[in-house]
Image (cartoon, rainbow, N blue to C red; front, top):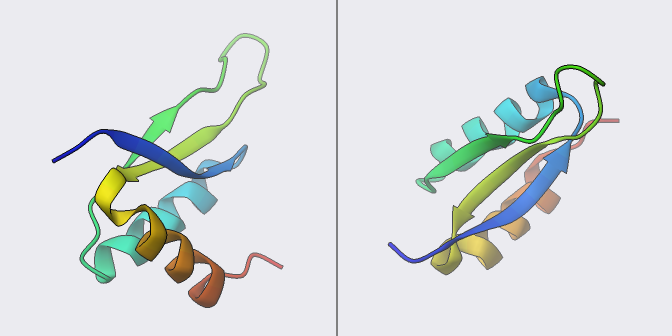
Length: 68
């Protein structure tokens, strides 16, 4: 597996978990990197995928996930 790249970022962890789950259903391995500062409550949760899966993952996010 190549290097990991960020494909999604949000302050709310449940949104990152939803993205990770949808990618998993589409056979894309994803991890969540917690970049939130626990003392000051700023930052985000980043969803990372392998470099080979970036384009496919972005397409899935755009077509299958809507948080509105």
